[in-house]
Image (cartoon, rainbow, N blue to C red; front, side, top):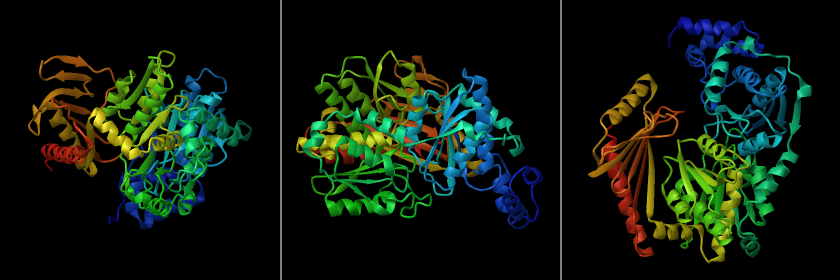
Length: 579
């Protein structure tokens, strides 16, 4: 450990030490300065980055940590931006928070700062799902909203996510505008501390009731639920915010046999029963699987801490349970919704759906089969929300999805919504049961009809500054020397979302890509295989998404086709990843 402190870090620490912060925080800074210079360096070597969606980081004191001062500084910058860009004399803001340690404190801090700046604030009275915050913004006519959450990150983290008046996460031009205002608040002393309690209203049950009623109207198969009200469904919130609303919505739909995981119904920011509160991982479902086996449940659903994403496990005919990936769950949901809309005569020809560019193309195939337009956006649900807003009043949004376990049905929420998704997925299971099938059977039927699509995501981690440079070099090499073939298959199209150009390598024609700039490359091969490469926006990783497809003539061929596709994916990845 170094005995000296970097002068820049020393200067920043001294600035905080002599600012208007509480004595406990000052003592912690002094302790680090004397006894833990490594921790001091980590906490003070830079400011916690406020990016296009807000900020996320480890909790603790210092500018590179989530604490009441960095939250207050972000809120001051947000308030400054809102006052400059709102047409309202007294703009309104909604605030929600999840189960994480300090989430309530950070939400109250945000409310205090916004009210000090003259904003009317609606603060939820207890933890609530992120999608309900999106709903509340629109329902209450707010200019903006904030939710305190770090999604499925480890327990040491928390975050601050910003929404605009359309209910979607901030995008251009508001994202860069807010970032600039936040950067201008470079000291805790610049936070307005004269909060106005009269401008802070507590909200809760009334919003819940309106939200649940809106979700209930999405139901497409009430008779199927009436036929199987006691269908056993295991649900776990994994200690998070879904604990109250997901069971309530399932009951509102008519499900009577919702099996809880009592240990995980307890809201706890330490997530004591799981290694990671991530519904993408089978390990998060260990307790839920025990309950499912005890009760012979048809379906297991688990939501992440802020209940915007859901993972599901379905039962096969063999009795075994299978975790579906995000693409598979979206596939079943798309098939179910469009099938029922057609059966009920509710498809009029003006409908559309949206997915991200790294999500399975099977969703587009299904949509087009039902005469529904399908649009692609950049990675991130905020771009799906932006497309909904763009086409509002012109075309009718039905549903959208992304491979990272986020889905939305209906347009009264403008973010991925696990509360809605749980209700619609459970209803799809009851509908399948009416046909003597499971959701696994439905997925196999889809593969037989549209083709077997298989996807895989591999992340390559590169730590530190050298890692960031290595990732950029990899992107530069793929961009400057685009492969003519991958794994022996010719590349037909190269999509460069940073240059916003598409190159047809067969005809050598160039096309414009009408999406925002993003450091993403995509190679589409002549056999329909697709590779997408992008650096992570939140972690020191470069991500490789591979999608392949093939046909199975009958159910007996599905396993062999899947095995062939798995080998093809592995060969493609071996070709691309040389380190």
